[in-house]
Length: 401
Image (cartoon, rainbow, N blue to C red; front, side):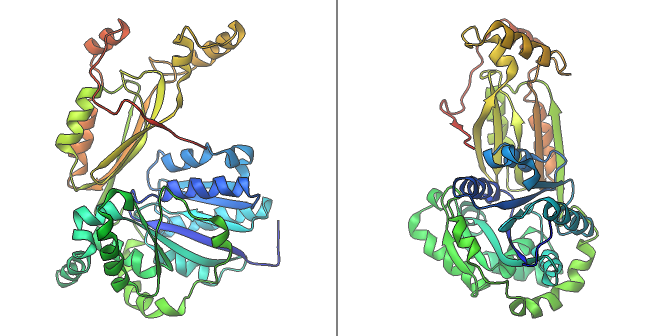
């Protein structure tokens, strides 16, 4: 669908696990409630496309799947990623007439190639680069932000580029900075974080956002992105980033995928996470099930040293096995026919996880996670109704649409 006006575009950028998908889901929910037509593009560097699946189950997208484009297995700031982004925007605007396009990048995405792409775009205009920064991560890893610039300077002296460079440069290019997870640190320290951040980019606004709550109307009031402000920064970084645009796994990042139909042993998973999860594992996410909670499909969500579990829904297998499911015989038969087509040993139950971390450390944690699946002997115990010790929180939050 062609239009003479340029559609505003807002980018949600930020390091791995900073809360971009939570904010994006909230904005899509507001879009539906307030009848503000939007289009969504989500980028996941993993082949599993976890973020795309999470956005896909929102009410808005389920009603109109044509508003969502998912780009995965590539970083959006790479040459291939930019090509895929261009195709996605073309497809969206050929069938939709949004007031706003929202783009969620992967955590490893550098904003500069995206800013350059939108600068002279004919159909859309970039109005906001929102960078989300994890307050808890800054507190633990960078002394509430105080050590961020010194570590960056140390990298410059050593001619080294790693995730510190990425984090600082994401902040440098942002028009708006959102501090997330502020409720999980000492509130007295929040002004310190804001102060250190503004030293890096004094031109950006800094706000604290709780649970992704940001009024979608505010995104419609933004002026076009200030390209002049970052012109000198672009000149300095262009030669450096030219090499990074060729690759899909910059900054020594590596991804690993775990696929298995077995459940995790809850106690062993708890112990492995406390023993093996360290600073080099930036992000792990995906869908799984526990032997102790075999009815529920769970979302695994780890960022830095923090892990949360959420209930996505119920497995069809769990519903069929529940004697009090409240379904008719016809409905149960239909579910059984669907389950008969599933390739796994446990019906539709399965574990699909992606782990992202430093390429020297990611295998250690990934291999440790694989030891948490039930053994053949434990599977037989599970079938016989054995109750596995489960130290995870008894009450889990159910994800809302």
